[in-house]
Image 1 (cartoon, rainbow, N blue to C red):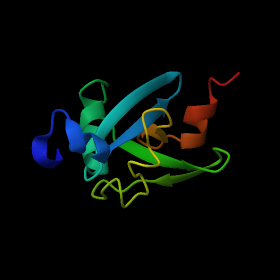
Image 2: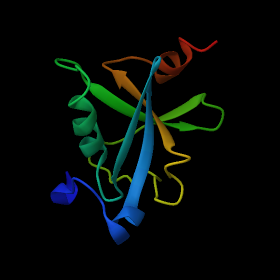
Image 3: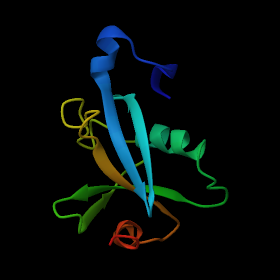
Length: 113
């Protein structure tokens, strides 16, 4: 991870980005430094999700949840549009987690009422 920051204290806390990762019925809440990459987020998720042998992809949702954009592993979260002022603890940015060739729309809609 960028700078190996296990926690943010004081001013560093203002540089955090908060993500809500959706995968079917599961929700994972992740807080990372704004300079972290998509790959850093995947590594965090990989430590709590059994994804062995599966290709993990993250997608950003747009509009009415019908449009998704695949996030590049090497991109910084700020490059993807996630900023400390638009991905906050009370309004985290939503991303969709898929494995292999899953459709992100299917992953978020399969268990909706």
